[in-house]
Each structure stands twice: as C-alpha cells, then as structure tokens.
Image (cartoon, rainbow, N blue to C red; front, side):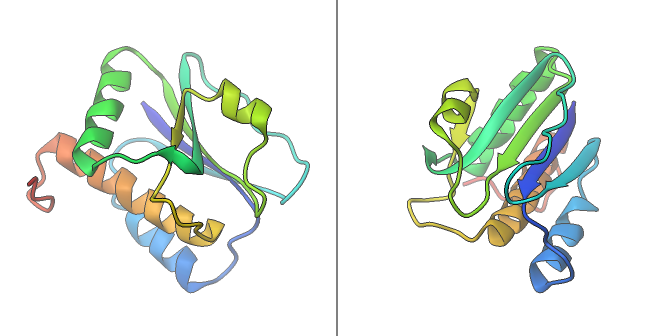
Length: 140
C-alpha cells in the first residue's frame, strides 16, 4: 500500500524539512509527497481503492500501535493507497471532513503544518517499523 502525504504550503529548506526527510527515507513502504499551494491547486486523484485521512486538531487521537494496526488492516483489506491530507493555516473545510475516512489528530493543541508533516513522517515510519517487527519501537 502506498502512503501518500498531500500537504498545503511549501516546506522549503528548513529544520522541519530535514526531519521530514530523515523519517521519510526510513519508511520501507512506497511513499509519495505532494505539495500544493495554500489555496487552489489540484489534489491528485487517488489510486483505487484508497483511504483518505485528514490531519485535524479535532481528529481522533491514536496510539502508535493502534495507528500501525489500522494501516495493517487497510493494507490487508486491499487498499492501494492511504492518503494523508495536511491543510493550510485554516485547516480543512466541512465538506472535506465529511468525505474523509478518518480525521486524525496529534492532540488538542494546534500545530503548525510544517511540524505536522514531521510528526506524520515519524509516525508513518514508526507504524511501518512496528509492523515489520523492528526493535526500535517498544510497545508498552
């Protein structure tokens, strides 16, 4: 299953982009990153079948183990792509929230979209590491 992160705004050369790159390079599953302008731009069409996850401060909070199990279930159910959408400063509209398969949050605080990219990259790496039995993650 391909992991596809679609993010609004440009990350450029920054400390956050270095973190994103560090973790994204470790993910052994197929992975794609798409950047869109803050407004406008065309969200790429998904592979079918696909699941769509919106990163949202009001989204469901999950443990790393639960997140890994969710990705595993989607993969085993034949999903070809898991799409993770990161909005601009104003987040996502109501229509996008309603269409999503999952609203995922990294806690009730508001995070800058550049930090969300780095946190998501780390969690995708951690989830795929958990599923491969890598000893880095110590389940508790």
